[in-house]
Image 1: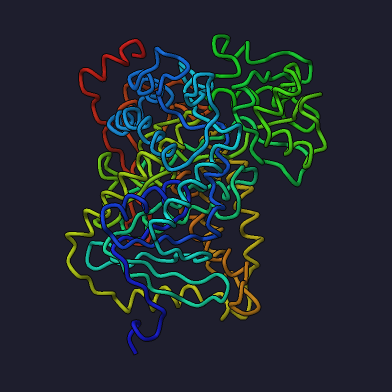
Image 2: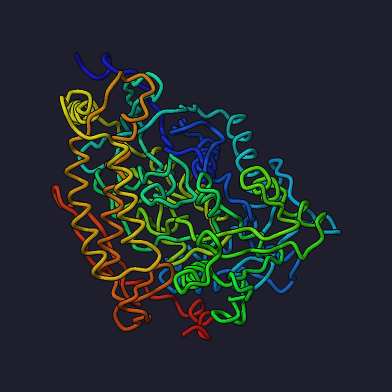
Length: 575
């Protein structure tokens, strides 16, 4: 019996894996280009991490600061990324972001307004000018609502609560994906001429994270397994301000908008400690600097009661706070019983965002594997060594659109492909193996141990000895994950789902650790205690590239592309 009759099968021109901002924007563009498009979501439509992006969309619209321009936005992005960025991505992003925001507005997004009726923009860490277009502190939610309405109206197929477990290839190109419905555990074949990976990040490999259960690095691991290249995996951003108390909410994001609207960070002695670390920008310094500053205060014994710092906006009028930060007001009231208009919040660093990911071309968002495209957090390049707040939402719009365009153009020329039954049989066998084992470990135990290893040994500060230990622990965890046992049936079995996610998390954890060990310097979000300085001569000139080599992982260095003359002049004062 062939897979065509054995499995439920769907066929499209473009298959988009991930239904966040990047995936939805890619779908809209694919449809506009005339392609038949399907969007696959691991959870429910509307539950993407884009919703958590609260502060705003960075775009040089110059509505508030007339002096702003794409050139300044480009410079800020490159500066924040410590020149590890793909310069062409940074250029396209800065140039195209305003147009993408206007498009959202035309599609019905409601932004906060200036007195003249323009879209209001607020200050944010690392940005020279006020350039974050926002909707209170619920910007990501409004963006998802708008993109979803638009996409549904244009008519894409949506497969919700469906997890992809393997990309299907024909020779050296991607021709679809194999997955299963989380609810019944039934397998499904999704044939496509092009695939866009928009699966987000890897935060669930760490114990303290702002990311929810879906963020297990699936897209990067799927791409890597199929033969695509991963870039700069050492650059993992720890957002400076996650909730630290009570324990049940540890890691939940406290938007940077709190600092953008005037929030002040203090240690337990009441000192405004950012004066020491970045006297010029203070609380609006880049995220890597603020996160390390809080971490240092705690380590030196000046932390808050539960091991963080105090973030205070209560010096502002209560009505102002409720109007500008409605979500934060409710979040602290309901989850921590703290009224942020009357007293400080307790915050600390939380694993938040991945700058590294699938290596893509700037113009088309194509990966190194024909037929595979990537956008958003799953793709690398735009943010370099450290992302600026607000750049994630404009990234989704600019490169989600380009990925959709690129995939539709590729699909229109791609010849018919054959689906290889052997690949499907192998994926199915691997997926069902945990049910067949008479004995083995609980996947939750392995996951907990993985999170401890990454949190303690490959966290916000890194050192050779810890990472060497982490590599050894990861090898043991891989062996344990290969033997996990799952009980019960395939019907909505979370332990079974986790057994699959563990494989993805172990792949990305190893890629992060290998890359972090190789980069013997501190740059952006990658901080080494044993190599505290930037090394422009060696590491300022190369990226870490991860590829699959048989059953093993191969790490090599490739040169950073030279920035052309006129753009280089914009950065001259940085050198």
